Image (cartoon, rainbow, N blue to C red):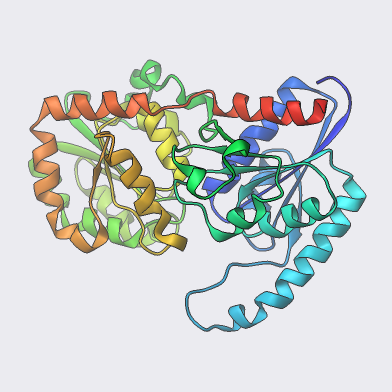
Length: 364
C-alpha cells in the first residue's frame, strides 16, 4: 500500500474502544506515509481528548447510548441519531474515505451505517465475546468482522468473520524484559509479592471499596499493592498512600511497568483489558462490571475462565474474595497453570492482522 488513501476510524466512549482504533491508525501510518486518517467520535467523550493527543484529527457527533431507564437522554435519542447520521454523511462526503473502520462506541454506529448506505467498504472490529445490537445490525452490510473470541458465528455471518484478536500497545509484548525498570519506577520491594489493581480509567467503586476494606489483610500477607483507583475516585482513596506497601494512582501511564512487576492482578473484564492480560499472562481475578450493555464483561471473563486461564468473582459474590485470593496466593501450581493457559489465548499480532484485512479491501 503506497498510494494515497483515506481511512476513517470511529470508536470511543471508553479507552477499550479508543486505543484499538489508535493502534490501527498507527500501524496504517507505519506502512504508508501517504495515508490520510480521520477519526469520528462522540461529543464530550474521552476520544475528543485522547485522539488529538495521539496526533490525529477527530470530528464529533451528537450521540449517546440508550439508558436502561426512562430518561431525557432516551427521549432525545431519535433526534441524536438523525443528527449524527446527517453529520456523519457530511463528514464522509467531504473526506471521501476508501475504507471505514468501527471499533465500537456511540459514534461508531451512525458512522458505519452511513458508510454502508454509501456503499463504502466497512470493517467492524468486535472486541467482546458477546456483541451489542448495533454491531449485529451493521454486520449484514459490512465487508469484514475482526473478532477476538471463538463462537461469534452465532451473531455474525460466518464468511465475514476473521479471528484477529484485539489490538494492544506494542510495549506490552515484552513486559518481562522491563521488570527491573518497573520495580525502580514504582519504588517496590523486590522481595515482596505485588498485587496490581485495575478498575478502568474512570475507576470501579466496588473494586475500590474491596481494596479499602482489605488493606490490613494485604499488609498482613506481606503484599504490596499498586492500586489504580480511577480519576473519579482518586481524591477519596489517595490517603492510603501513607500505608506502607500501598500506593494509589488515578491513572497508570506506564502500563508495561505495572504489568511487569505484578504477581497477581485484579481487573475489570473489558475486552481490551482481557487482550492485554492474555499477553501479560499473570494470575488474574476478574471482577466484571454488571452495569454494561448485555453484561458483556461477565461474558468476556467467562470465556477466559472456561479455559482455566483466570478466576472470576461476580460483584454479587464479592464477600468470597478473601477465600479466593488466599487459595490463589498459596497455590503456586495454580498460579503457573493460569498464566500458561492465559498465554495460550494471546493474539499478539492483532493490529497487524487487522491492517492486512484493510489492505485487502483497498487492493480490491
